[in-house]
Image (cartoon, rainbow, N blue to C red):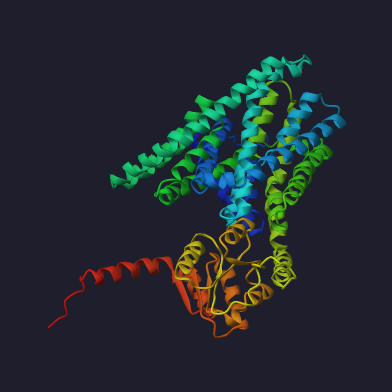
Length: 564
């Protein structure tokens, strides 16, 4: 297969990734370990077949582009602006801390200033693929924590784009110890910022209208193949086109393309069309990382590798944790962001590679960073598992806070979380898309309403509308007791997770056995689980659509004639 390196790299990467991922799953290890091991096996530092590293990197780049495109489809401009107060200072502050720690490590090792600076900056940027996979697996993309993490990631990407533009401009001077012209540096920075600003403006003004229009026109043709091709053409075409024209990264271009396509009513269909390719190429991303790994550096410089790993997992994560807490976000949000950022990836590899090319960074320092990066990627799923184990404690802590907030206090101000004076009210759990529609209709009908929600931004929005709220996990006795379920008219559960909804139903049934409880479910298994918990009505999307169509059919007088 030496005459077909693309096919050989693609096949070997996917086949070995599957084999080692299956082995990792059997051993109860993260499947990422299998993907990385597959890359090590076909890499240049192990005997046997060596895949084409350049081709593997380009295939991985396609995966990252498709992943960021998918994120953009579900991430509106409103969501991005909503978290700017924490994402911008948080990302820049955390990057500054990581860069400074890298500089200190370099100084301790006797590295030149330029090498320590580039090394530290490379340690500061989290991996897009790793972060988003973790968020999607835990269904956090629609939460405030997910929006903050993605916004934080976008700010990091913008900062790294600027660094990649500036590095070649100042690299030569820093490498030989010469001064850098302030005028030349200011001109380079201004040009880079101007290009990014022009790109963003063009996407917001032209792309916001043009991309949904193209998608709608293609959909009219009725060809699914043409629609799928149009989605991929827009995602890849915009990403690679703007990278050449404006100097931004492929990932950032794809993100904005997806965000503009998200304005279309066909955004959900577009996301489904890119999902299979996105997952397949994301696997190749991890394989390409494994190919870069020179395992010998772990034995040659173990303490340096561990120090770099400590900066990634502890230094930058603690900085992010402190910044989020300082912004008065909940502890759960701070922990989520800290764990999410405890790894580095694609931008780090690109930046350190440019540093090597510009003779600012040694090859040994690059090997150290790659070793620390791979270890951080392997550790990240384990950190998330530890975080998941802390959820009961966090739930109990938030429930206790909710109970304290719901208790009567001496104050001239009304207490929105006191439900003791409510009777005949409807309790709605969750203020997502479904919960918002329900609350709007209940308010239109003039029914007493109480909402249970955990996300601070949604709670603020509810309070601004004068809707009574209880902050806390609805599956906890204290939170549901504060909702005065004994006098409630009904409980409507809009939580998308069937297990969580089932726990809420179980606790509510214990408090008020006769209370009517309704919930929504996304699958037949979820419907069965909720019914086992004693729910009165489970609304399934597919069933409701079928019932609506049949009711309309009957209303149109299209019932079949009865036999004589």
